[in-house]
Length: 241
Image (cartoon, rainbow, N blue to C red):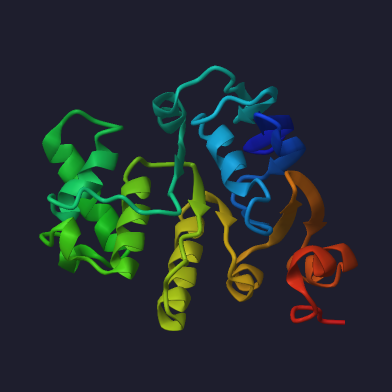
């Protein structure tokens, strides 16, 4: 049994089927990529795993526990954290205070929260900006702050929704190194991303969603050479054989 199991998950909005009969098992310590065109259902799937949305049917199981009916704060307490496509820092608060918000999910003690936040900022190599206001940061800085705030909740499973969007090549390379370092500290990562070069480098397994369904699953090489994946999303650029 994996750390995360998604079983026959379905979600519709009116007449629009966003996710249909979706199944996935994520093993502890994996980095799994979730790819697909816009509207494929990737973020909706994340929202159900994190209990922002309730599925119409199916279930999500984390470490053997059925999360049906849970609230997002309960999911966070279990050890699941996520980032969002559109970052929303507290712009009138410092970087340190923003990260402390995540740490307060584990403690009510301000000193402990500050210590945890500083530890995370050091991990993501952002401690030099701890006194900067959220309003003073660049897009790349906002992405790193969003990641730090999620890490401050002390997650076991990290859901990353387009963390590399808006970054330049050097910033993406730095983030790839950081994400591997985070995994090596014992975390499991599921990554939604449109930068296929980054996904192919980072992930050990890739799942392609299309129209709410799992279309292809396999190693980066298997997915890159799958004709369904090429036709639906990748094109010929990533084929290796």
